[in-house]
Length: 168
Image 1 (tube, rainbow, N blue to C red):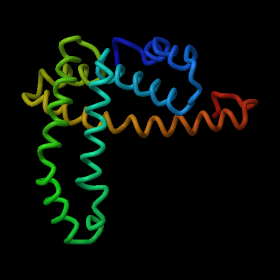
Image 2 (spheres, rainbow, N blue to C red; image 1 turned 180 degrees about the vertical axis):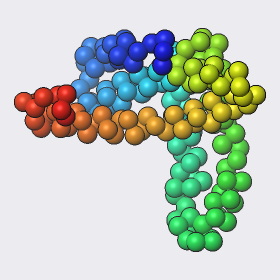
Image 3 (cartoon, rainbow, N blue to C red; image 1 turned 135 degrees about the vertical axis):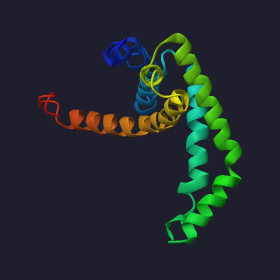
């Protein structure tokens, strides 16, 4: 992300962690990382819109693939996944539309990692928007991985504060 370092975005949102009256650490950390990741990915996106799209994406993937126990059976899993994909195609289209709106906003604002991806692809690929959109779909899911890694790091720091943080 050439135009804005993630450390600047983290600094911008640090008040979520230090200026709060409530002390639910999990909620504060989740809100902080969600805001940092969404802004890093798409610029200063409407956080409520991002949350709605993310929630719909996770729920739809759960119904389509993850909550389908038959997916694990050879042969049968492929068929049930295809059927579920058809069954939930409307929700998947809603996710695509929501992400497309967010991505278009990022492109208009000329901010965010997915804007930069789009700009790099645009001169050579006529389908640059679709490629950026497909990657932003995955980028929304990456947040959960980052959040888990950060929680693990915070737990390690809390357990051994005397350790050099650069080595943790």
